[in-house]
Length: 164
Image (cartoon, rainbow, N blue to C red; front, side):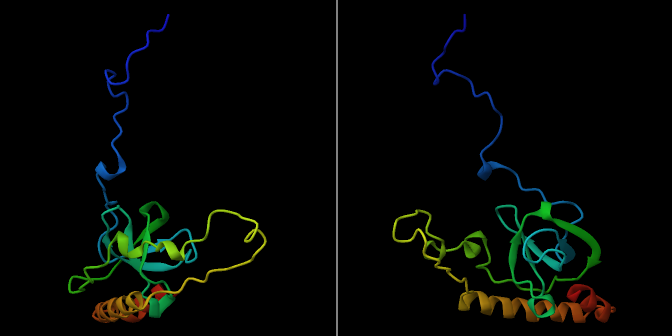
């Protein structure tokens, strides 16, 4: 016969921590300034530069946008391959507001989830457009990153590699 115990007296069976309490570790091959290859998403196969790790554990990367059209994005480190290419970004100043909440979409930008008679067959496509704030941040980060790439001795090769 199975003995039932009260839930309050039961010991916690699982040792898993909540996501917010887990430690975020960064793969050893990924360092700030590393050139990564994206494996999924719209920009699959493109090379990007790793800028920093966000609090959620996601990686902040950019193309730069002028080279290959990849904007500032959050990417999970499972979906990138680290290459041996590195760029010295020690003098790169990132805006303080670049965090996980910065990339979160507002509620008005999200698609309506419920189907009603009115919108059952309606084909409303809400086009996403970047805010002015994001465009300004992209321009400032791109300028600084391109200056860092120009300081490299093999800058032509690096620009060609990033834009391919």
